[in-house]
Amino acid sequence: MIELKAVQLRKQYTHRRLFSELSFEHRSGVLGIAGANGSGKSTLLRCIAFLQSIDAGEIHWTQEGNAVDREDFRQAIGFVAPNIQFYDELTVQENMDFVQKMSGFDPHKISHNQAHPVDWLAKTQIKDLAEYPYQRLSTGQQQRVKLAIALSRNPSVLFLDEPGANLDALGKDLIKELLTDLRKKGTLLFLASNDPKELDLCDRILDLDH
Image 1: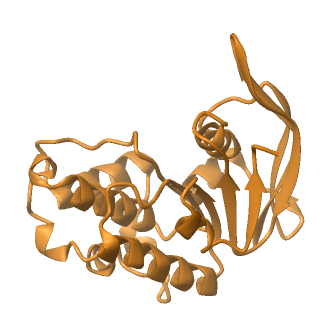
Image 2 (image 1 turned 180 degrees about the horizontal axis):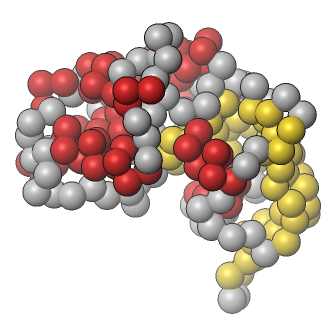
């Protein structure tokens, strides 16, 4: 199992400090990251995923007591966020194939107990949209595409930044189902949100407002 230990993290912009002396660990289940708009939820997710630099502190990812190589870590994660965009002119399937190719993921090497990338289109209920251009989809459908593509690599760690954004009631039920399934499979999950219903899905909460 992959684990996170964050020690004395600090991040600030020119005129504003988001968080400082922030330490926490996460070993299993869903860690919710709560806080008001502008509190640093999204930034913290990007920092611990090594997608953005931290100003001070240490971020340790380990597996069975051994440090996880940075490149291996990149191959092991999925990330869903409102600002992630795909190519409008490409179909859903083409976007998925492109992301996998650029990240070096080989769908032919998945283990027998892992879902095939195409299966995630069905699990997120957009299989019928696979040949649709991304730009023709509604914002809710595009959010499902983001989920499917992030999950298509069967990540060991999944970062979710406001996963229910633009989703209707059925879409939010889907988030709940996915989290339940992924938790059972041992995926380490991070969920940043200020939506109480989404935070209710978490095993524990890290509140950046306190």
